[in-house]
Image (cartoon, rainbow, N blue to C red; front, side, top):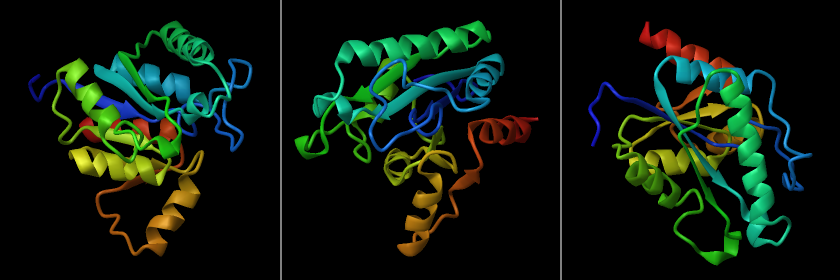
Length: 189
């Protein structure tokens, strides 16, 4: 495993990096980055972070779009980040429908252990920025630090956590990815 001087961050995709939709993001034409999200990812790269994305993509398992379209969305994301001087090291995704009972669909930890294994890292203390309760639960299950953004499903997620009397002392809440990155980088200075 890499030493503690190595900095890693995990991001959810839909609702954190790009707009989300209850009808799923099914094509490159529908994939729209949220304001300042690409710049925020580039800032993380410039600060020395290795960046991974963990994303449930059940639209594939539901037959709503093919793997080739998901790959095209991820290629566009990588290109936009690269144009800002950044780099996404890894994108892990679960293509299964919720009823598939797979190990990779968040809140299960399969995507996160795949990231840990492929990047040769320990997930303890790694920030994981997401917008859903499944992101928060998955982060906690592997010892990562959950961050919740209010973009995407964030407001609904925060209400769910409060309704369940869930302790949120380990949860940093921010308006969006850009705000979360600013706080994270300011804490290091």
